[in-house]
Length: 422
View 1 (cartoon, rainbow, N blue to C red):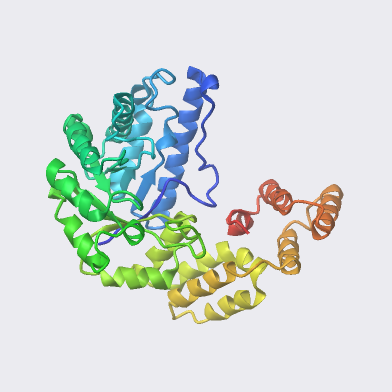
View 2: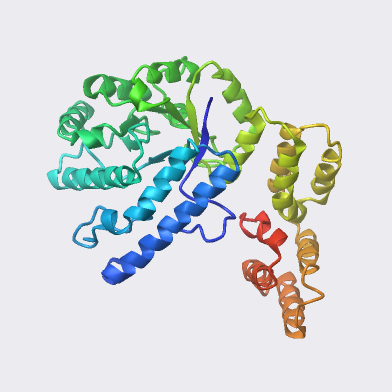
């Protein structure tokens, strides 16, 4: 079975935002409040993943603010929040979810500057400590890029090997290494794997941007990367994304376009790998790809997703809105590719202000019999100003969302109209 997952953030899920603070405000009490919030947000995202059959999830590195900066955060957060970690870890285990973490671009193990390497090791130890606190086994990984070139790639690669070998075993047990889009090709990362023993995670878009051998297919490179994984490392994993067009080389698309994904998915169907999606709309693409590849093919899943997408689609294109409604009338079918293709086409269509005003009126209809006169007056006034180019659309949408919260309109609170950039 191929798990499909997403990274860090969840669009449209209430109370799932990670919070942080400035270093100057990072008092012990403030840090405790932030950690409490962030672990609760993670719990919400795990519950979402369970409900949507998402079996893989990347945890944000920011979940413990200043987690690797012991001068700023010297809390014994593993002990203080041990019960929460145990509960989260048990839920992850019980539902066979695979989690991972991915330190940022400043965690560089092959820098010629010792202080940079020291900070990188501290950061890797923080990530390891977090995963260890959950009680998850070594199949739950930490992803790392090789780092810089610094004018001499051969020396930079040698430093990576030397510094890797000095890492604590508990860090090495979780660390996997990835090809990037500018400096280190997949073949170079595979050669470093031979010298370090670190498993390799293949990134398809990075390889397209900075190929080792353009004649070799994704299937070939994934097969080579799979050889670097042991049984205790878990099922090999890959990163999948699509090139934004137009966009800078390596820029991710706003969503995973389903037809292109399925071409890729079926081209590697014989390979047992987990697929981490790297994409702007995060969980939405994960649900899309999960619904397109799962064996349980009942139209109820598409109907549930349509409830979330419908007003976002209507704001872009009434014709696509009507086409989806017609598509879902056949209750014995499962037209998942056509369903998502229509949604993708609609959201790629330029917004029409009049059509979006119509969508807002649809949404207002949920409140019209309970809203106050003051709220009605404000809605009419602000919408008129927006139509005249004198008011922010985002402020108007936030006002409608606040009304949905106030009047407990659960259907609207699930609507992606409020969360997608449109």
